[in-house]
Image (tube, rainbow, N blue to C red; front, side, top):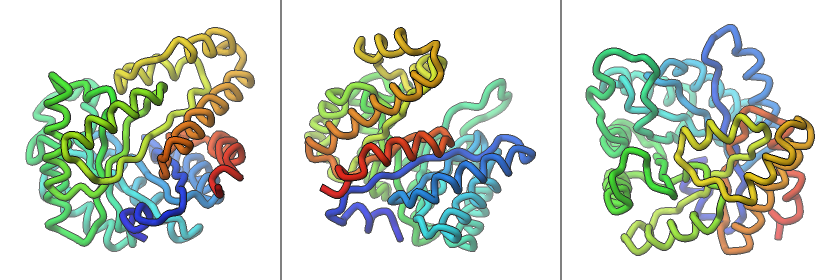
Length: 289
């Protein structure tokens, strides 16, 4: 199923994101975790892509297994980093052969200690979106930052970039993580005022370890509200308590979003089946309402 079709349905959806291993020797463990999440029968799953296509084979294999073994629609990521038209075309052909029809097109994070030209044929996600649409019948999604993309000088510039992405053929957007729902609601107001009408799916990151807070801020520049800082300060040194508190906080965010009319939720599961299962269990009746 193409994600655009799922987003047109009235039913509430809950999806999860996983990431492939950086080293092939770790594939078995990641595969077990990924399929453990797929076994929960989420609405769909998204599989990330390593810098410069470093995990391309594993990304496509995992996405294909999710679909074949559990009949869960899968999204494969593609990025602009170190990408040429030739290797993107090759990746698209592999995805077609594997039965993958959903792609999340991203500019991508810059690889560490990389020497040379990072963006060659594709400088922006909008260019990658257009190329994918020209080379296959894929449903293409994109990313957005409720608190502005770290490389955008202003919020207005960021919105213009989103508009170009949608005009290029992007059919829905998934947000980077945020920990204050008011930031998402304000972002939605600005996006709709700017004339961007595609579905926008909030991305929720359950923080279950103290170290994740610093990494989250570094990756997305997101604001950490005092309420959440207090939770980390109180439970961050107790692994079990922090995991339970992180799942509860993410669940509370999701319930508030659903209560305010949001129908589709995407969770960054960090390859942890127990976290995905915990959130799903907390929402078992709510998702049916």
